[in-house]
Every structure is written in C-alpha cells, then in structure tokens.
Amino acid sequence: MKKPISLLLVLCMLLALAACGGQERTAPDAPNPPAQTEGTADSSAPDPADAPEPDPADSPAPAPEEEPPVPAEYLILDPTVMPEGGQRDGVTYAAYDGVVEHLFFHPVIAYPELAFDGDAQANGLDDFMVTVNEFNKILDSLYEKDYILVDIGDVWSETTGEDGTPKMVRNTLYIPEGKTPMVFSYDDTNYYPYMLENGFAHKLVLGEDGKVWSWGLDPQGQEVTSRDLDAIPILDKFVEEHPDFSPFGAKACLSLTGYEGILGYRTQTDGAVEWTEALEANRQREREAVKPIIEELRRTGWTFGSHTWGHIRLGSGNMAKIQADTQKWFDEVGSLVGETDILFYPHGERPDGGDWKQTGEAFKYLQGQGFRVFCSVGVESFSFIKKDICAVICDRLHPDGKTLRWSRNRYLRFYDAKDIMDLDIRPDLGLGEDWNS
Image (cartoon, rainbow, N blue to C red; front, side):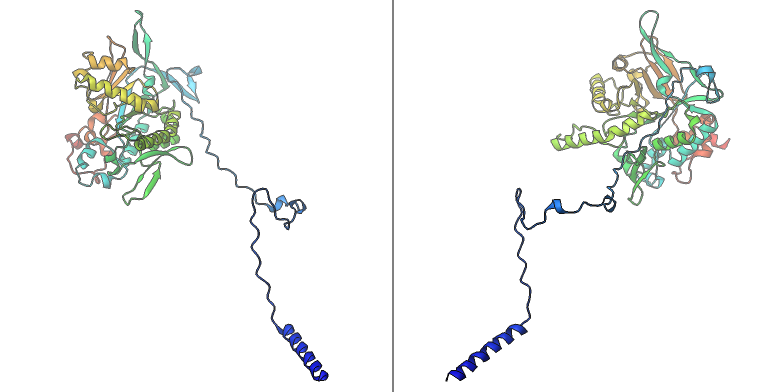
C-alpha cells in the first residue's frame, strides 16, 4: 500500500508545479503614494542634492515684461517771447498785435448715417455739429490760409496797474512772419448719452502707443478704437503731420461741463437718485480711469476751461444756483483737470443780461472764483478788456451746420462752405442766398 500512496503524492506535486508554471502573472496595483505634508518627506524619494544641475541653455528664457511706451517729447513754447535772434528753426518771427481769431467746435459726428437718420435729434445735430469729413476739410483750409494755433491762456495776462489794482492786458505775440494766430476751443467734450446713440465717439482712451484715441461703436455695434473719428485725436494727428500749424505746441481748450462726467467717463454725482456706496465706488473708478488721459492731454498742448457743471444759463439771475453749480464744477471737474481761469458761457448767454456794458452780481461772483477770460459766441472774434474789474470778455465764431448753411460769406477768410459742407449726407434744410454768389 505504501507504493501506491507514494505514487499518488508524487503525481499531486507534479500537477501543482505544472499549474504554477502555466499561470499568467500580473503586476499588483501600485499603492497610492503617502500624503506629503509640510515638514515631511518621502524617504524613498531621491535626494535633490544628487540631481544633476540643469543646463541653462535647455531652459526657456522668461518672457520679457511689456513696458508701457515712452511718450515722445512734446515741446510747448511761449509765444510771448521772441526767439533769440528773431528766428527759430530757420523761420523768422515778428511781433503781432492784431486780432486773434477764435473758432469753437462741438464733438464731431463720426457716423452721419446715425446722426441724420430723421429722428428727433437729427435737425439739432445738423445745426450745431460738423462731421469728421467736414472738420478735416476745415483744418486743411485753415492750414492753407496760413493760420496757426496759439493757446488762449497766452493771449492775455493778469498784471498790476499803476494804481496797484490787478488788471488784464493783451500780450504781444511773436509768431512766424505771414501767419495769423488762432485759438481753438471745443465745447461739451463730455460725450453725453444722447451722443452715443447718434454717431459720436463714446470716450477717449490711451492707445498702445500711449497717445489719445477715441473709442466707440460703429453702426453695426462693433467696437472701434481710432484716431480718425473724434476732433481731439484728429487734431493731434494733424499737428504731427503739420507741426508748423502749431509752432508753440498749442492744441485747443476743452470746455467741460460735469453733469454727465468728462471725456466719456462718468465722474459725476447725481442728486436725483439715492447715492449708494456702489455708485460712489464706480464714480471713483471712473475718476481714476480718466486721470491718465487728462495728464496726456495736458502734456501735449490741450488745456481746460469751465462750461459750468450743469450747462446752466448764467443770465438767469439765480445767484444761489450759480454759486452751487460753480462749487460743484470745482469739486467734480476742477479737482481732476486742475485750475483754470477760462469760463465758456453755456448757450452763449452772458451773465447779468450783458457783460461788456455792465458788471453785475453774477459776473463779480464768477470773477471772484478765479475766472478771468469769459467767452461767449458771436459773429466776430471780438474781445474787450473790462476797465472796472480784472477780466476779459470775448466772442467766438462757430463752424457748424447753421453757419455752413447760412453764413458762407462771413467765414470765407477761413474756408468756403461750398468746399466743406457734406450736402449729400445732411438733411435738406436749405441754403443761404450767399451760396449763389
């Protein structure tokens, strides 16, 4: 019996070995690595000190940080000082005491198809605005007729009279021979909400080149950033291309209200709504956003004046309203653009029923707030230094739809409306008799 049992045991062992040798072997699942916590290390990990030093040539170079563009130097010169030797850059300068012309514009229409679409705003826009194309042609004509830009702040100065009282004096300007000095001012460069729906730029921005551009929406609702669709960057470009049009670096004086913010930024408060922390936080963001634009404008020859905060009528005689409005302009606009002694009358309306024949309560108050040059609107570039108070009053001419249609002869020394006006895109509202001459 022992032999069969032994044979049986041997047979079982052979079968077990055969089964082990023929089974497919698989690797066991890898265990999750132990969690690493601060101050501990995996003892099985290689020592970092044993790792080879990386070859710097194999490492990608870090991307250089993009630096803001360095603005080109912009030279602003004083036209009340004769250049040494009577010449500058080969140009002869001469004393000038004649009339300094003054033209003012509103924001220009970038998309006439939106402005002149037959809605309730169309005729008013035709009256008071020019298109981008018309503005460009006006600049070309002024340049061809040898006008040059000067800053309104250089035309008059405050001094002390022999009796010890302050007074304004007209400065002698030293300008290139054969040229005629001219002041530009732009009213309502605030970009009011009604403008945004009627073909105007929406706001000013700084481009990647550090220059002032306009931003807005085209008729298809697409965003457009440009230097060709607003009077501010258009004039900047024109002076770049024709530096002799502004030999002293002057551009224009921007006449600002405040009730819808400035330069397209909603920097205003609004007493008609409950003023919340969220509204104030947004206003402060807008104030910060507009500051670099103001700085660049100032650096490149633009100046600022008051058009009152609320575009109010200064002939109303309502002193409480005039005083409150003036303080609000200082608080919300002057605090951003800086001090100014230039006041542009809203609607061209003179305070106290007339400012050059009398000096009333409103005029005295405004002069007492620091204003010295008071600008209205008229048919000539008229100016008058008041004798009883330290102030100048002046009138400005207004290239716009009204004068293009009805005052062609009056503006011929600047341009011919026949060469300027875009009749094909404006409403058919008639033309003056002088168009037939």
